[in-house]
Image 1 (tube, rainbow, N blue to C red):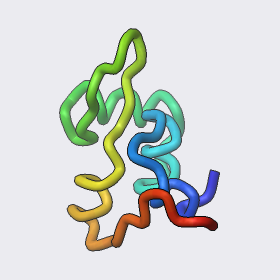
Image 2 (image 1 turned 90 degrees about the vertical axis):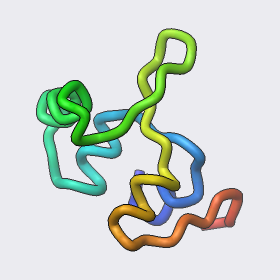
Image 3 (image 1 turned 135 degrees about the vertical axis):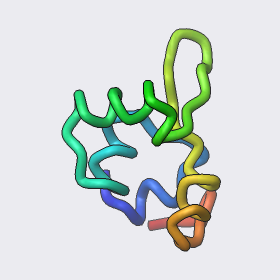
Image 4 (image 1 turned 120 degrees about the horizontal axis):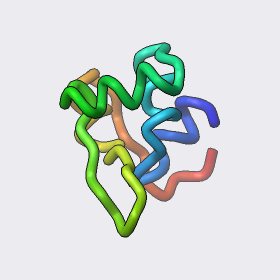
Length: 68
């Protein structure tokens, strides 16, 4: 997944968020999420990252539903 693709989705996985937005490896991304550095929500049994608040925090614009 690319950053442009991530910005078109409402949520992405913790490892994808860590890698794309912060350059973190999988375990580091989950550690950051556990500490609250990456905001997450639980959907069913999955832990996901809402893209809009994260992008806004970093000064990026979300394009939900946009074609890439």
